[in-house]
Amino acid sequence: MKTRRGFTFIEVMVALVVVSTVSAAALKLCALAEISLSEVRAERDLIREASSIKTRILTGEISDSGTSGDIRWETVPGKAAIMGESFGRLSFDGTGKAPDLQVSWRDLSVSVKDLSGRERTIVMSIEHENIKLPPSSPAEDKIRKKDGDKEASGKREKKEEGN
Image 1 (cartoon, rainbow, N blue to C red):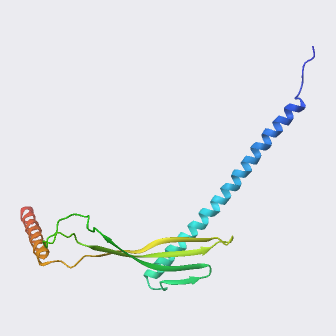
Image 2 (cartoon, helix red, strand yellow; image 1 turned 180 degrees about the horizontal axis):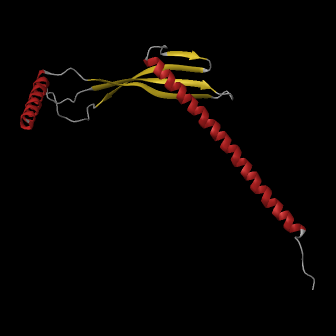
Image 3 (tube, rainbow, N blue to C red; image 1 turned 90 degrees about the horizontal axis):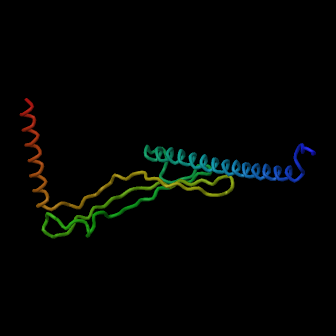
């Protein structure tokens, strides 16, 4: 009997097809990873630039809108009512109407065009702590004063107990 040595032509061709398919898939994955990495870098750079612009606006170094090279920015004010009609029915002025609280803020929008001509934009809040309460009624002022007096007397009692 004759013993077989080596591979047949078909086996070599099948192995070559398998290796080339795996290599092509690996190259495609590397290309996709490079594209994703460049996207992340561009977004990171835009976030850094937006943070820098935000700081410079808050310190008064630059105006609320402008351009610098490929970068454009502008601030947009926003306002919303919270705790409207459906929020609680308790009111201290006897009207049964819930207080209308207004929250205002400014958003910073920063845009840049990348090398491919695609525009990237990021929006971040620049100010958000402006809560405006409605004018209080005399009844609410009385209740707040009573609550303040109770807190102050409670603190005095605790202080006396500590001594």
